[in-house]
Length: 102
Image (cartoon, rainbow, N blue to C red; front, side, top):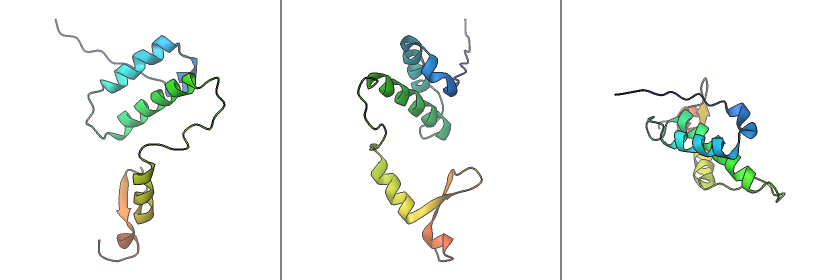
């Protein structure tokens, strides 16, 4: 027997799910067959991960998300170019934006 199973994840409702449900969603997000680097797959996994972290730190009033592992790389990308519309999934170097050669 072969079956295909689809999961719908409503990221606006993460805070209302049980811990068990959130744990299952984390595994589902990691098992997503999308290619590594897929924007939406990473975004959903990140939201679920942040919900898990938020629950762990529920009793410790600290600023969340101030420092992230890839902040350094994002800062370099931001300084050297920008993400462009309409979907902000395309990065263009400053040289191109200023009319120079890339």
